[in-house]
Length: 279
Ligand code: AMP
Ligand code: FE
Ligand code: FE
Ligand code: ZN
Image 1 (cartoon, rainbow, N blue to C red):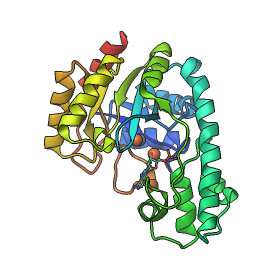
Image 2 (cartoon, rainbow, N blue to C red; image 1 turned 45 degrees about the vertical axis):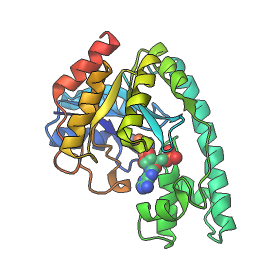
Image 3 (cartoon, helix red, strand yellow; image 1 turned 60 degrees about the vertical axis):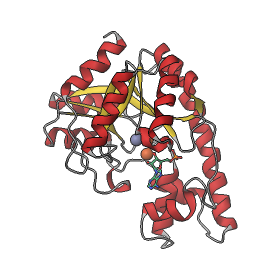
């Protein structure tokens, strides 16, 4: 078993890269990808920790993309080079995050909630700061009981403190990933907000611009849904990926490797991605 979707303190997870590696080993995994948002800063520590315990570490990250979908589009990137063209673009994306975060804090202050950017930064431990850190500040200020409450009340798309940020469009993200030695997988396809017919059309289109895989084996989906998504990937000639989307305390109840207990991502999933990368 493997887990190809996890987050650490390099972005919006609450476990350090070393802790995530140790959790993976504790579950008996053979390979792990840390896929922090818009950064590769987790890689040196993760590689060193994985080497110590003999775990295979896949170099990854997760990107948010502009898309015509009503929901959100995230792309997972695997086998990425630390010094490729994607790394440079990530720095610009993080600057866009920082400016967006300031505007969210201003919006919250306008709503009578006096948190500061320092409060937010104090909750982040890496260079990629995001809405979960703002949510944590809101929880600590006693404004909501938990992180998901902060999203539901203020931070989610359509809520009063939601602010857009610059994102890559999907073809550009895929091109940058390929130019950096990587392959891409459409993360948690249901968050696009499409019904099955539209999802099929979206995946067909994404395949024509070079998408490599679909995250069929996602912790939040039922076993039946995972099988359906794997079939969707196969229909379009795509590989599959899978993982828990572990964020530590920021997404309670998700265990590295097994998600909510029923996730199984076979080792051969990684072989399929490797074949797409030509490795
Ligand atoms: P950002 O990339 O800063 O816009 O924040 C997006 C991140 O917030 C996602 O990657 C999730 O980790 C988290 N997130 C998004 N929606 C929710 C939600 N409804 N409840 C809890 N966490 C969420
Ligand atoms: Fe996240
Ligand atoms: Fe995601
Ligand atoms: Zn994720």
